[in-house]
Length: 296
Image (cartoon, rainbow, N blue to C red; front, top):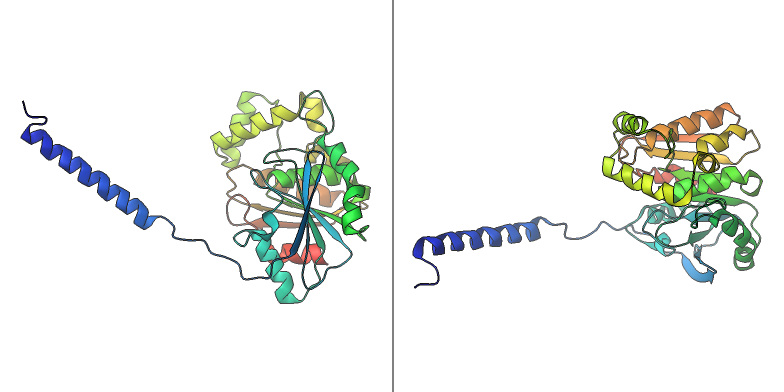
């Protein structure tokens, strides 16, 4: 008996041709490279302190006496500042092209995913106190700053808001890009969460991931209020750090609504606020205005 009869061989050959054509098409139509930023990378030195890794970046043309602590986004690490395909390279390029004297930048990392929350009932909590306690240790490598500033995107955007609004006397400026700011808590009802997804256009899968992450760090509503920027800003006044807030309208994480509300409430309480609503998705960034905010 033949292994495959003639009609079946024809179908097999056709299937193989289709698969081969599909494979060739995916290879031809896949991105062939990445757009890179033309700039001079900063000098870098990295250090480890407990569970924290931090890298210090100094522009080769010189820096000011200010220090920016960059708390990175999810799944990134302390080496991201000199990535020539990332927005951080565009910030450096702007400083170089404009002749502005940039601050020293310290990129802080506790791993791919982390939240700066006060110590609570969850095992993962307590990083806020650790970060604040490490500042003098970082000063030993950077020099005591004239001004301390915070910068973060996405997960890092939430982290800088928690740190800056919890310890306003320690920081002069806070730049939060596409931060995880929500008008409801992870302990809200299912119907309230669904309404928020519909209202903001957030991706339900991403929303579920955010919910799981928050539940790893806070045990109840009271603990959530200790880190919610919309709760922390209620005690703000004109002495609080200047805020730079930016968010894309079509943010799949649903962050536009909360960021806009935070900008409004902070301004009403006398905080200096620079709000940048942008036409784009998650972490659409106006790097030119951001670079000016950090270097001025």
